Amino acid sequence: MEKDFSICRREVCEFARKMAAAGWVTGSSGNVSVRAPGEGDCYAITPTGVDYDELVPENIVICDGEGEAMIEVENAPSFELPVHVAVYRARPEVNAIIHTHAPFSTILSVLRIGLPPIIEEMVPYLGGEIEVAEYGQSGSDQLAESVVRALGPKAAVLIANHGNLLAAKSLKKAFNAASLLERAAMIYLEALKLQALNRGIVHQLPDHVIELEKEMFEMIKTF
Image (cartoon, rainbow, N blue to C red; front, side, top):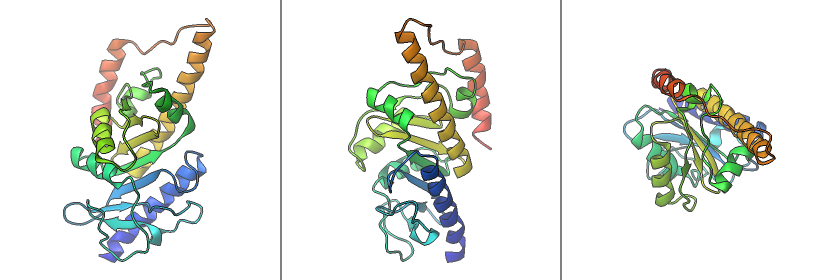
């Protein structure tokens, strides 16, 4: 069984380090997880308190939905495990989650402003308008419930005063979604600045395009 876990531990470590290299987190903030092989709730997740520049696959925790380790490790699972577990239980098709504190997404989360569908890629790859989950203390059941509710069937959610969360079929897809979300957030904030100076209007995609691309999202997210 350890051999099976080694694959997902390496993958979680790889994408956690990529997340840090992208500038979306500092130190040991943010977290990454995947469904691990096994019966019932079984997850590979980044640990609490290990900086990403020091992270190795052996630090990645394999645990159940209650945070109980399924193999012997020195580290405790991420403090945000309840959020990850809540999303996995609500979304059986989701196999990977990335939670980042990327700057532009976090600015929107602090302002508690959702991200409307302003660029073409947002709807087919993220699911449309990205909502802001109500504030909840880190690691709390309240936060987990808020995130699941605001995420709905989409691939992304903003977390009030905190950052974002991406849910996808694989870590590669979740990482790409995080990159797209951060780019769209940057574009939106820059557009809002110009709008405030009376230099234009922020236009959303046409409604008929949004509806068509939502159908594309339903197909894309299954692959």
